[in-house]
Length: 207
Image 1 (cartoon, one colour):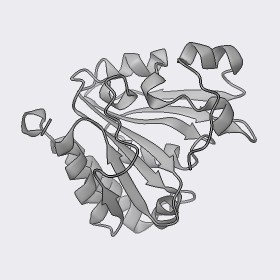
Image 2 (tube, rainbow, N blue to C red):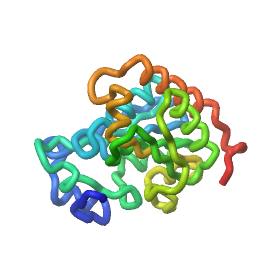
Image 3 (cartoon, rainbow, N blue to C red):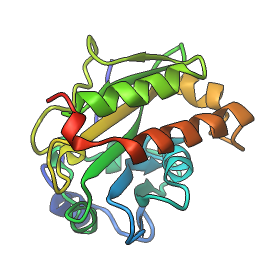
């Protein structure tokens, strides 16, 4: 069962109701030599743990964008902007310079698993292989987080279709140790995912 949010239609709606600096924070770290962006559009207290994974995957190699909830409670209901409505200007400005986009999300679940969406099947398969290599179940289809809407934030990079969205279950964060300090296996997975994203070529993608 999905949680309910405020139903914002765009970032402007959210910004009228919430205050940056007290309710939420935006973090952008640019790597001018990189054409890859790692996003946590529901970071901080909105979908707990996603900021930490996004930071770990981006490392010092890839561009990073975080939209982070800061409220003591109720961050999801007050700050969740669904991905096909996510149009925060600093995020769009970053994506206009990036060929590859990977978004990190959290979802409910009793077992560690990753639900992969987005329009780039080739990139999804590479990420799936990297996650499976550390023993975490992943699914490319048969789940509700397909992320195929053309306005989904993961599909709004410079090349539009070279993107993937990763929904990670709550138990997946525990398995990876990302709610606190990263475990050795989590760090290994981060390196694998970074490598596979770095070497992915749009010319070889299934679309």
